[in-house]
Every structure is written in structure tokens, then in C-alpha cells.
Length: 134
Image 1 (tube, helix red, strand yellow):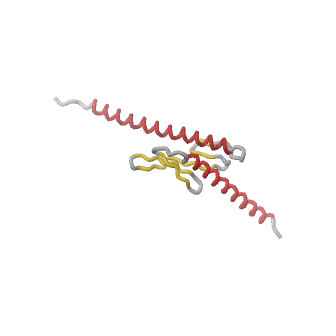
Image 2 (cartoon, one colour):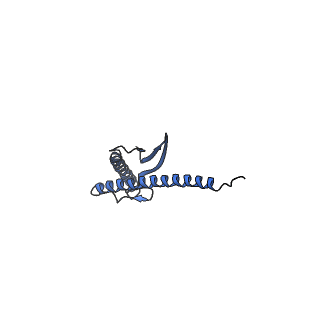
Image 3 (cartoon, one colour):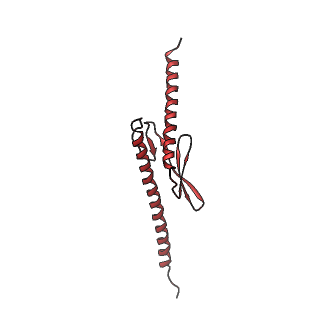
């Protein structure tokens, strides 16, 4: 005879497996969308439960962030999330994820550009203020 505890354990295991299948399918769909056209300087690698955003510069590859699925069944990149994923909302969530990824990439590139400008301006100022010997 089946006990309530056994039935609960079986149902929880079934639902967890279902959530993992949905998570993998959604992340694979997003990975395909992100890889649809090459983006110089950026790679997207799929793992078991994440899509890693890799910044490639001068023979250096740096993991910058990852797309994951949160407990509420939303795609998450850092603090940014899409809407709750259902069969009806999947297309909208993919659109949101691509838009969030584009914003994230522009933010990273803008920050890197600002840091490069700041360091070159700082270096110039240091040379400017070095007193001359008489």
C-alpha cells in the first residue's frame, strides 16, 4: 500500500524533473537565440543550468555573467529578470532576455571604455604635474 509520504516524495521528484526539463529547454532556446549571429568579442557558452557570457579581448577570455533560471521560473542575468515563463509568455521572455543581454553588453563595453579613458587621462596628469629640475 502506498503511503502519503511515498506519494509526496514521488510527486516532488516528478515535478523537480519537470522543472529541470523546462529549465534546460528554455536555456537552450535562449542560447540558440544569442548564438544566432556572431558578436565580435563575445561568446555564449551553455552549461547544464546556465549560459555563460564570455568577454574575449586580446587573447583573454573572461566570464562576465550568466543567465540562469530562478526559483520563480524567470530567466535571470544578475539582478535583471524576465517575466515568469509559461508556454504563453516564452516568446516575450526570450525577447526580454535578448534585450537585457544587449543592454548588459553595452554597459560592460561602456564601463571598459570609460576605465581606459580614465587611466590614460590619469597617466597624462601624473606626467603633467611632475616638477621640472632646474
